[in-house]
Image 1 (cartoon, rainbow over the protein chains, first blue to last red):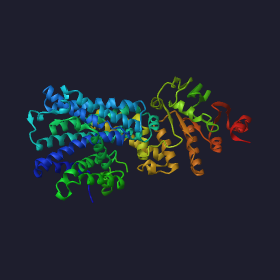
Image 2 (cartoon, each protein chain N blue to C red):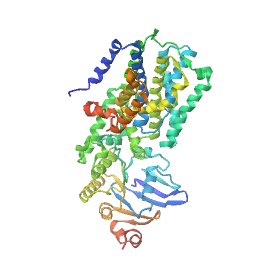
Image 3 (cartoon, each protein chain N blue to C red):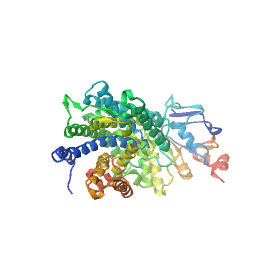
Length: 318
Length: 252
């Protein structure tokens, strides 16, 4: 098959036409996929590239979502002005989440500490009802961009797509640079990375902060998409979902983050369309994850890379 | 002129004194070997020089400046580069990317420049790639540039690691058991490369090695450690005949 890199421009252009063929509900699913692409891209930076078993992602997601929700409801800011602040709140949380790792906490210890961070945040959403609406949740107003209200899923789609394309391009540039190499070097051998003159501590903070920034932006999109945030949206099930996305897609691969988000978000919706399959969603879902991980340990991105080498992004490792 | 001066260096792990009051120096254009039985403190001393272990007492100076309080990446940036006994290479990176990682401190692109993909950022990356390829070519391993480091043979891995360490033209190179796992022809090749580096590039080399013939041939001076202390120091021929060394390490 003859392909060249222009496919990375043509595909998004084709995606632009999606609203012509989708109903509002399916468009909502596609929008959710866009949210999860950012969630996965950010998560993959820490897990797939920096190689740390850190599950603070759900905390970043929730903090971004609530930051956006609180800024719109309490301060009356238009949604589009909250996107970057939500990212910055996520980045700040990322800096905080990197502290245990900076102090030498690794592997299971880091996993459990970062899981605790996510649960602590969920508890915080419940315990601060004045800000977050507590367990009743927070209803956020319709998103506004430059005075335009995003009243339908189709409107949200174009705004989300723009954000996702910008973030993915920016991330790919970083990963293809000395920064991406430094992340992988740390993942492979921290001592050797330091011996190359890489200030490993700074790169830990950078990776977590970038991750928090990207996932925080994803959170602000989530708030705009669902219109109502509740603490259960950010529970441990989400941790498993995020992990499944990057495992199925491909650890450390940007293309993998995109593929994983599409598959994991769309599968339950597709199943729901076939009457005879209804009721067995969980089985199919769980089985599919097991099959992918068993037979494609480097995720769907490795399958794509075999189909054609142009999908072998420089940050893809087989 | 001395390049590196270690003065009364002591490294302690709890009650265990791994390196005890060791003093020695390294000069440009000379190979200095550290030998001794397992557990003599050679690697610990290496780690202390590279900043991976803290000194309990004593000092280490490099080019006249104290470095024993610096972190490993700061010491690396000052110009002391090392290879590792095992592992060391970044297996998930290609040989070329490993060397580029070695050049990390010489690729000054900023976060903003990278995000905006500016001409400067692209030019810097391109120049570094060219330099890395040249270095691989000089060692005769340019053909493995695009291979994953973990797929390379033992000899190729060692060469890539040395190229990666040398990428920033460091004045001092620390080699931790460079000959281990190498077949005789590869050892000979490595020996030639080390001699060329010291004689032509005037680099100072400190190496740890158990392959005694390798050490005797490649070194200018040898330091023998036993139980964390220096028991002998001198030219290879003197060491070969030293009674204490024969008893503690070389055997009769």
